[in-house]
Length: 392
Image (cartoon, rainbow, N blue to C red):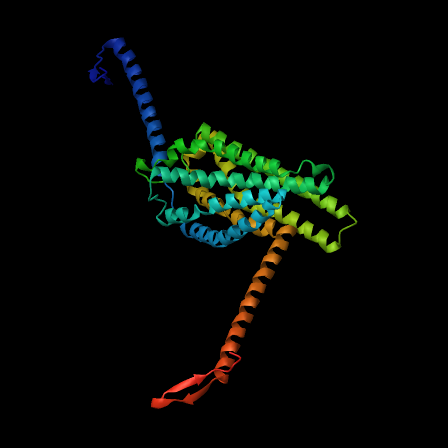
């Protein structure tokens, strides 16, 4: 006799059989039981992947906090000074100044999110504010990363056109066109990151209070990661390498520049590409590897990303913030117009300080002279009065 229980709609059905029918039903029951066990094992495995793929947030807490604090301390005054200096250049209709001003404003808004991320990391990756605050902070953080990347490309392209096509570019390099290009970069990147506001990773009310922590990779997330790596890193890197190499070749072939001026251009070209690679290459390489794991389910079941790649992923994301601190030093201070503006500002400040010191010394000298020239004269009632010279 064979007895198999099948649960459905709250009822239990029993099959009883004898003879050959019993053997037939026995085989079918065994097959059904094996398939049920296999299904249960598969479900348990999937559930265990979600449960056992736990992330340790202690490994990256101190490095991330140090990164964010250092970048904020260096980047905030540097970008504030850059905004002031480049604003003067924009008023003087300097085309490159428009891109540098847009880059500095972008880096400033990017830097203002770092204190929030520092608090988040210090609270063991628990967001203490609302879901909307998480979404806005994540939108500004990731949005401005790629705005900064594309504006760096605009700066390199503008320098390339100005150096390689100095005569032909006189009609193309206009203040209005530069402002339109910078505005378009802001709008396109902003629209591309608009889905941040509907992503579940920004919903704090779910109970985990995680803010844009990496979740299970899906087809949409993998596709978005491929797009970010290709459009947000590979293409800009190719533009930076091509334009800076062309600038360097043109300057090296020039006979009107001194050797030290050519050396300076060479160092700047190498520094631009090197800084870009240091800040953005690690993050996008790990992002690419994470997208690849979607095509290999066995890697997801082994929790490869959560156990081995998560900490380098977060550190590389923090490393990308260094770009905001060093952009002013690299681009602004390398501009002759900006350096002249700094010299004029420092000279004006020194003149004001010297004038103030001279006026202070002069007033102190006059006071000392008036005191030394005044003489006490005895008066009635043992009172003293002071006679002042006619010069006073």
